[in-house]
Amino acid sequence: MAEEISFQETEEILESIINNQRLVKIDSKDGIKFLVFSHPAADDILRSRRTRELALLEAEKEGLPSLEDINELIEQKIVGQVDQEQIKELEDKIVAQKRVLQLTKIPGRRTPIEEAIENYSNEIEQLKAKGEMYQYHSREKKADEEALLYLAWAATQTVEGHTYWDSFQAFEDETDLSLRNSVLQTFGKFNRGLPVKTIRYISRHGLWRVRYVAALKTGGSLFDLEDLTPDQLGLLYWSNYYQSIYEMMPDDQPDDETIQNDEALDKYMESYFKQREKERNEGKVNRRNTSRKGKSKLAAWDRSDELIITPSHPDYMKIEYSEERIKSEGTSEVEVMAPNSRRARNRRSLARNRQGS
Image (cartoon, rainbow, N blue to C red):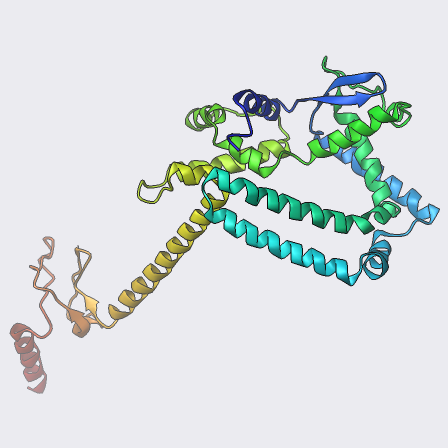
């Protein structure tokens, strides 16, 4: 990742996350247009859901099939058993390559493995795409498209900060289909958020770490928005993850090379937490066993606390006395003696003789 993102690109990505404004280039019939995308606010999301529900009702009235019906058709007639087996085989290859990637730290050797994983993923998408085109004829997909249209309209602004289309209806009536389709395609990718790999890279980069650590020390705010965007939430999550690693004891902390390698770090931390869990469980067993052993007798001194018991106490005969000097803390009325001492035996014998007489 360090080789793929320059300092300037890192700065641009970070600022777009913090300010929730990303400059994008959009194709139109008049050439390239520069627009600004922002993640929708809570009110916009609520209105998009209303738009989806209305579209769903309309599609049902039109008699469009449900997504469940179309998926059954795809599974039975369009994507055959051979394709399903190929998808399973490709998924197994991806799992195997990811295991190899975790063990490979040299960047030059990691590149072909990452390319192989990407190629296998593309093959899976192509096999699944055989049936996915039919899903767009379902009532749910039509409703989803209407909701996405609304969000794209609400999130698209000019560089000057104004909504590009004055109304949602104006966006639906847009005659420049190249512009509208380009906005939809680009916004859909933007709305899903940045890849996890990119977010993790930003969260441990010095440009962000300075802000994050300063906010931790001073209690300052990192974002001005009340509704955090998916990228902001992801950045906070991974920042906390890496902060916990940077605060580990030196003997437990992974080296810098491992920290920079996502797969290697995840494997290291998984092993670390398993070891810690094992140690905690062993500690609980040891404490439980120690506690059980100590329940057979009462100790006159437990953890250096002084315990004064008179002969009338029901557990007087069960007390296990240490050789530590007995103190009564100035209480002259209380006499403390070991139950099996000569003095105690003589006192009991004298009491029995008195009772006999």
